Image (cartoon, rainbow, N blue to C red; front, side, top):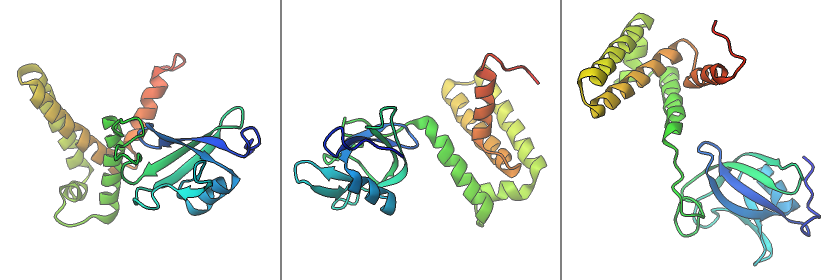
Length: 203
């Protein structure tokens, strides 16, 4: 990657973004040494302009930033650093340096998918998810149907709260079924993205 460290006297801005929620967490500066150390250790390291030395985020608090990826912009003088944060990022104790919550509820679906994947690989005893996998595809498909019917009933004759509750059950059982067939919830998202394009044609 070609980074222009000369434009700002050896430094480039490093925008830190949560790789999952896409929230911007903080802004720091890197020199070549900080950039290299970040790549070597997998922990985001900056150059402190006030102390004039390298510092690894979280080296004192433990709230480190685990590197996922780094890429530069079109002018090769700004880095986008995607991370998985461990704890709050700001020294004030907030999730971001702008006082925002680092959360995006829709992203929990990926976390849930990862959890169900783990259950499928490990099949721990006394787990409801394990019992679903052990029951076979027919039973898992039946559960999806049952939860769909219950969602429809709540939508037509129930309460909004119960509809959301049953809809969550439906989504969970659908992810379990997808996992058993070798798919993930992201595969449905990709399909919907394709359908949203003007060139998409129904199969």
